[in-house]
Image (cartoon, rainbow, N blue to C red; front, side):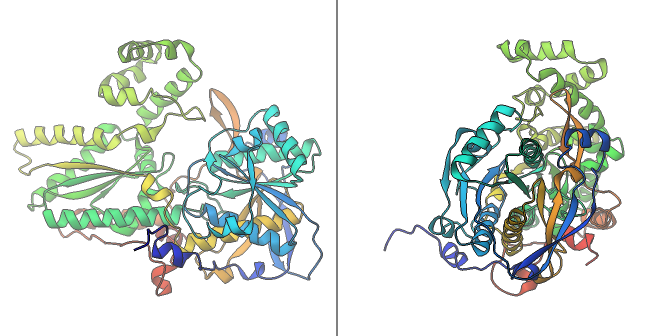
Length: 551
């Protein structure tokens, strides 16, 4: 037998032709809408982006054929991986070649640093063909280098001029697209002739608004995690002896956790935004979990599943205040970094915190307190993916149950298993929805470039309808921006979209969670992502999107 280099599914998926909105299947004309303004801090954002602020929304319509000049385009994959990134590039490549066969596409290697360091390859048909409908970002690699200095922008301009690149496409999340907006403003101000277009990527689902209904990768990642959760629930319902504490990716919002709950119906699901709105303490969260465990134990059910969002502790008000102080304290703090032992670092931090935050810091297990002071991410924030919140909750719940048992109020047995689902979903083969959506986003970017636009994000809407009815266009990135504190300074950033407690997805969850928690239970077993079969199985978007569109 020959060694296998590709699985049967890989071979089959290579032949899949992603679906496109009808407006992108022929010649396209752009229709401009009303002028826009930023979501907040309008005066500040306008002052920072005088050349790209207030631009109109753009939609596409079928039009007459026209000659399109030759363009060169550079593409950057920025930040964490998300299923469908390769299809954005495939759609961009096909769109450019449809506009003019002589158009060229270059990929900057390793993320934004490739632009600065002049590390690139030309993306040809033979290269792109190998990556169509595949997961991952390995076609050119990704990175988290921030573009924030004039010298970086100038180095980028230098390589663009050398290669004949007229436009750069940045595929990334809110921070990456903020960088794209800054880059677009700089190049516009200098009259370089280099356009910048963004594409909305993040499995976290927090890059969304009225014009960006969802970020790509969210659909696939949630389906992957929901399969795993369903498998665990089947096991729990079989063995009947373990409580599974499952932490899910999503540092700034609970969209993944909520979507997975809607798909799998666990016994308990914590939504960070609700915790913050109710001003809950860590003790309150533990009490809420404990009450369900005690109730189920009264029916002889000493098992269950608990979904926990990765960023939970940042939403507990007292913890949020502590983390904010730590972010400001540890940003570029050479004194702290010079300390050698954990105990020295702990004492240093305690001496610099406010009284309330010091009390919270002292109450934490040393392991969790240490995790809060580990190296910051490139944006100056605590790396919440390194904080094992599920283990913290297991420890605290076990302690509380022991107290209740001593008081005669709990007669069950508590055995817990912890899980963290994160990287398992980031590079999965994209679902049909994500394969189609990302291909459409890339194709849309090519049209925006051909029309000479800059400072726009590729937008595809009406996503619960069949793909032919999707609405393609562009949204000014400045429209999504506000001012936030980063590294101790106020900076313009795209506003993150949190779970709306009055929104249809959360309201559905809130209405049904009591039934999911009780002795009858309502586990759903979603199974793996399906690529072939009935449309209602293979092409469905997330439950979140369906509920938001009242379907």
